Amino acid sequence: MKRDWLGLLVIGVSLLSLPFVLPHVVEDFAEEITHRVGLSTASAAFLLGGYLALQSLGLVLVALRRRAGFVLTFWIGLIWVSGAVLDHGPAVWRGGFRSGTLSVLWVVGLVVGQSVSAALAAWGAWGHRDRGGPGLAD
Image (cartoon, rainbow, N blue to C red; front, side, top):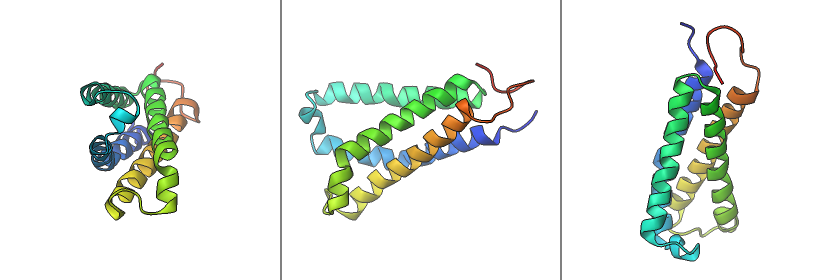
């Protein structure tokens, strides 16, 4: 069986971003972002769990060489990046973001990791992949 290096990269990069995603989200919860967007902490935690489950499903489908996994992983990554940049970008750019260096590291790690994951997933979904024979399925 031919090894799917692109799929392995998508999975690896997405998983490597989780140590940045988790502390960033915990910090969001501590800063009461849930109240700012009109949700209870419990509701936001439930939605976050569902979102992480979708991200996991995307990676499982990538491992199974399914195009849908690449598409899902692309959209999940794009949403992570868009949310982080739109909500925190100006404060990070100005300096003095939250608790300082660690807070910046977490949000930058999230943005970089999920951007790379989304870009690789886009290549897997719509790029130049071998569409014939065994391999990527729709």
